[in-house]
Amino acid sequence: MTIERFDIKHTMWRKKVDNSIFSSGHIVIPKAYVKQWKIPSKFQDNGKNAEMWPVQIRFNSKLYEGKVFYRPPTKARPSVQHKILIHDNLIEDLKRAFPMSHIRWLEVELRKQDGKKAAQASQETERETPFWEFLDIEFDHENKLFIFTDYFKQDPYFPEVFKHLIGSPKVKQIEGSIFNNFENIINQDWKEKHHLTTELGAKNVIYFLLDEKNKLIYVGETGQDLKIRLSDKEHYKNAGIPNWTHYRFEVLPVSIGTKARKEIENMTIRAYATLFSNTKDVKSIKISNYKLVNRKIKN
Image 1: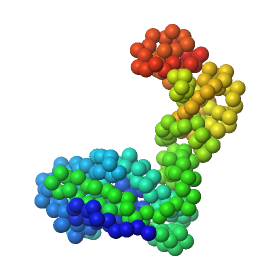
Image 2 (image 1 turned 120 degrees about the vertical axis):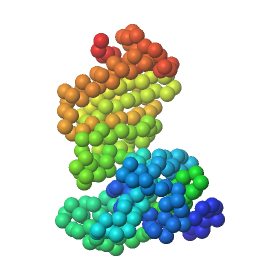
Image 3 (image 1 turned 180 degrees about the vertical axis):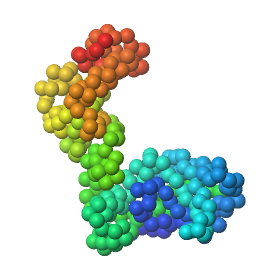
Image 4 (image 1 turned 90 degrees about the horizontal axis):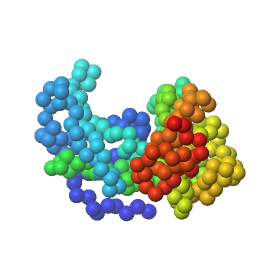
């Protein structure tokens, strides 16, 4: 049971978490809150070059850059409209904060691909998976700061699965297929070794292994599933990093084949050799006490 908040410092709008946050990063501000937040007095529109105003957004103690977007009246829409524009890094963090809404949004988008109208796809999906999540939005008028709080959330049915799923390449690939965005490189953060069993869709990758205890680092590539590649103990034993503790990887676009992937690997290894001590005495500025253990380093 969620207890109502008592730490609200500014006029607050409790917004339902919906598709607009994840798909476009646009949050239309209701007219009542435009007035209460005194947005017109803070952001005077001075014409064509002043339709976006920079703001900051605080979410879970992190600060993000954002904008308030002003849309003047048109014949089809006779009133002004104000939107909060949020950047990709905040969108990704909101997906992690609201994993159930994120997955439900993907379900709606997939149904739209099957030919269903947006309203029908949304109504059907919400009827089959009924829950509500809300994002509390406050505006600190003096500091031009929006404060986002993920207060009313639906607990994921399988929390550990959802935690690993949201940032996985497989979900990114599903989003790419929906929005015709397959040519992006999908970046991942460093993870501890035991997380490898939960990876989904980690194919056609440049990967990095790190031995935190012995201060070693290794760069590799594979077209096969990363879990299969790294389950071969002989592979990373021969690579000189048998006791690796952490890994990260970058999923390359499907248009990049084996030859190009290997060239990217060679380029990355050579770049790392200029930063770490290495096996080929490549001149390095040695930014840390880690050693690059790759044996094949191009001149």
